[in-house]
Amino acid sequence: MHRRAFIGRLSLGTLAIPRAALAQSVRKVYRVGILGSHASTSEMVGAQTQNSSVNALLRGLRELGFVYGQHFMTEPRGGEGKIERLPNLAAELVRLKVDVIVASGPALPAVQQATSTLPVVMAGAADPVAQGFAQSLGRPGGNFTGISLQLRETTAKRLELLKELVPGEAPVAVFWDPRSGPRPLSREMAESAARERGWKLLSFDIGSAGEIEGAFKAAIRERAGAVLVIPVALFDKHARRIAELAAKSRLPAMYALRLYVEAGGLIFYGADTIEPWRRAAVFVHKIVKGAKPADLPIEQPTKFELVVNLRAARSIGLTIPQSILLRADEVIQ
Image (cartoon, rainbow, N blue to C red; front, side, top):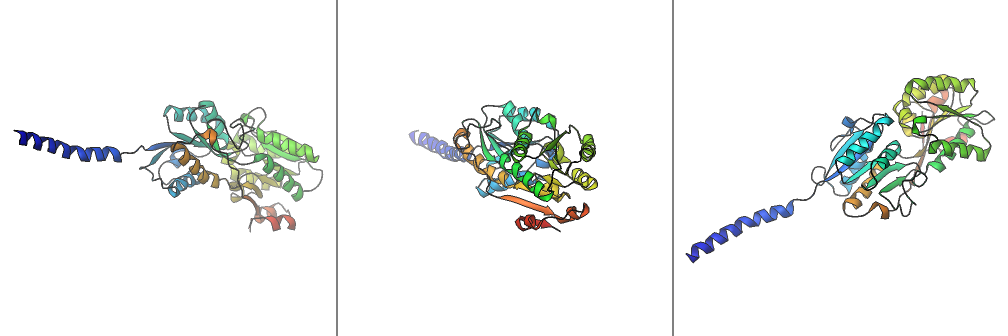
């Protein structure tokens, strides 16, 4: 009797061991929300996507030892260049109770509107302190952390390069999207930089893709000498069309994103916009391991690129100064 009871207890104990071991081996699979402003959701799904930014984030997580499907999954949402969709998409990610949201540029205000508690990693913000995402770079103090793109400094530099390309008194046309707000930060910075240097700007509101061509025609009528294209989701989606219209209008155009020169545009100056997505993985890793965004200092890019498209310059009869060519990181022939 006692022997049977002992054997029964031994059997139960033996069965319990693998169950306990199994319970210990089960780990939480973190859910990383991703809000993109340009791509579609379908382009951002899975462990290998059609989107270079998301792939950079996934690569960064792999470098930290995170395996997709085993340690984390993604919940991507893409705005397809329609800024009005971003608030609803951000709210959807919050309702899903993801562990952290990664977003950049135009998507960040929508995330800020959707949550003040869920951790947010900025994979590139224009100026997070000026935009109200953080109290300071060293100590953000809220639920946002990540990477700043130093828009104030790069905007001034773009204007300087344009004036070096096209010296003289002709004003610079600035294209911007009024849906970005009553006075977007990027426009303020351009106006401030121009005032400091005594240069005249012409601002053109473009609220839809159908208004882009009209803006170029208006810039010609106003005798603009060059164009500064402010980075907004609407323009980025139509980079090739904008580059073609700049060539047709024979207006030298400066861009804030490399994708424009790859689409045939003249010149780009700014920080690498893919690397911040890879660096965002470091912040995601720290947050899911228990760190608070408020305590994680915001990083600033250390590498800036100047890319010149000589083919685009020839198409408008522009000679690129040797001083710019010598500084260029890449010259497209």
